[in-house]
Image (cartoon, rainbow, N blue to C red; front, side):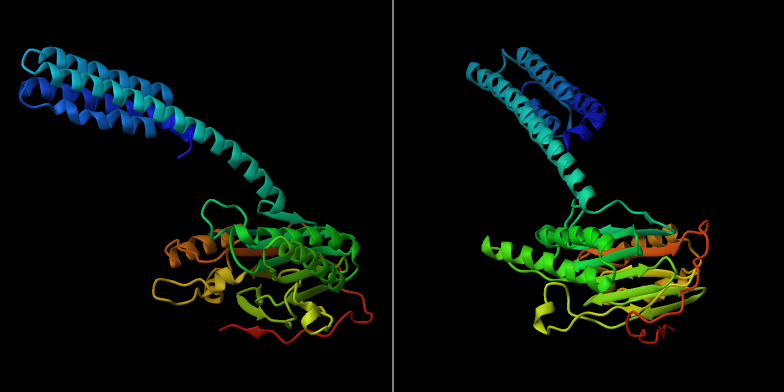
Length: 383
């Protein structure tokens, strides 16, 4: 527990420990010199050194020394000289050790706090805090790292407003937790840049692929390993045309009224593996209409298992919560997912709930013109 948190809770603990020392001393006084109850009190300042602030640890330690000295002075005649000396020296050694332990713990916790502050800022720069806002669209959701205490890991997401419309990405890096951060950061940084300059989703994917290849080459040269990234790219043009491009990513869901539809508009190879076939990725016409929602996730959600081994039924949960707002839906999904798995997620899990803001103007119908890609595969309603 960091020191910055201990200093707020140390007073109550310290007062309780002081009361325990007083009670032990009184019990020792009442039972006479035959029983040395005060010998058990050495653990009290040690506990204070671990759980209280420096000031309150000192108060507990002084009380321990005073209580021990009082008992030894009362029973000095009844105890042997050597036994009394050993007891007094032992008391002073325990007191010195407790104060030293508290000092070292404080230094460690201060270093931890500074390191955590830097790490938090770096992680916030990599993954922006949800909810996000991009033009007419809001993105609610959550991200949970499989590595306890980490804000980022193997999943990436972003939503940006560009000259070509609203563009967003959700991705899953091979592996999980901290080892996957490098490849995830490379893919995310290239998306943020390419989304503003590439006219098509295909061009954005190519830029992300090239960036990931360079990262993999550096990783291998430094003794690391190559990683690929499954990603789903989506855009809504200024005219209201929806496009999606799946690079090996799992399907997403469209919520329209009370109906939940799974959309699987073709799978191309994940980013980093594009050279295996040489086939160029192509985007599809896709969501949205003005009143539709899109729910995107990573396989840390759909492949999460309960204690009995069953997979998390995401589509069923969505069908039962279509009346919730985006933020409420995201909160309900997170709480339900943690309850379903008993808090034991084995992979990074991300959910994005994307919807046009109610206060924004309706999108204009897409103008007639040549298609930019093949037609979408028909959606499959979920029952």
